[in-house]
Image (cartoon, rainbow, N blue to C red; front, top):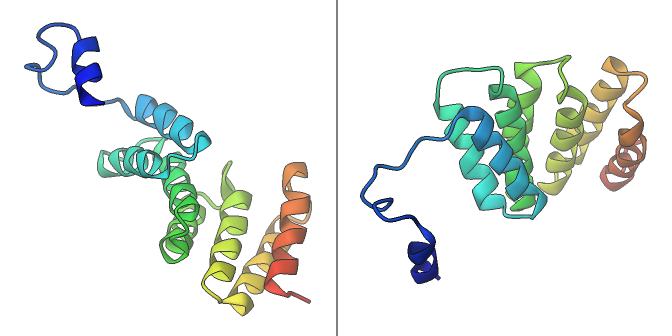
Length: 147
């Protein structure tokens, strides 16, 4: 518990003000938290970066926020966050994943028609999806009952 953590801290560390993480470190720790399914820590790291000045990491933070909310099964919040991540960078690294996440989140809140429209948009904007997304896209279409 907290006793062990205090004992492990160097002398005087408790008196020092907590140092603010750089956006890079917050993202690194947030992604590590996401990987171990610690969605609360991942969400906190993402929100920390998003609260700061806009940096190149802001889009990554928005995507991490969406993933952490989806992990917590907050599909309403995740849908908004994935939509924001997509709109921050419509051709960026996370664009395809954001649209897929948005579709899955919409399915999660019962908005299957909107989910299918999002998957159609994904297909229209990215006719050749990233190889690692082909199966998840097909699964998403099936879950949403798309034609």
